[in-house]
Length: 248
Image (cartoon, rainbow, N blue to C red; front, side):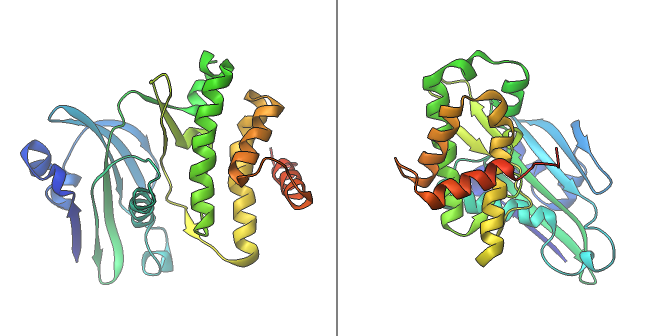
């Protein structure tokens, strides 16, 4: 069984023709960005813009092929959830999958390229001067804090909230976009709290290297929506700081 959805905004012209169904999408060729045993990511030029095409040709071994949602389905559902919550992310163009005898066979997701953006990890690696601009850092990380709090308030965690999965554009007051979230999910109880700490620790992993202590504290306060930390907040901050100890 094949299921495919094309965003009506892209249903005309070259995009409507090339992204019409899963068979057409698996015949597309473009610049190979990454590849692993189960998936590949390609950058393709259609019409007057770039798109990213992620294709999966497997869901893992044994029962993984039959049980639960596939990784590619999780990714498109999570991006659509971000959009429903008002969290900026890559525009979803088309998505779908094919199953045979109940087993996952293949799937694909197409997103529009966010032109003029770079991920935060790339900015840090290349010593971008904006990271030394206190006003810019405050503006960007307040957006990240708000998006992260919105996710966590809904009992949802990203599960890979690293700087490389956060894009910023080239505007003076840059906009922030969250990407690449196939592992995101809803949680409850103690597991929710553990995953929240993990999300925040992932952000702080590079944060402790490239941001001032006062900037990290300002981010945490913005995330909590508080100007003063209580004892429980301080305990959480210590848990975040210690999360990756012995694992780095």
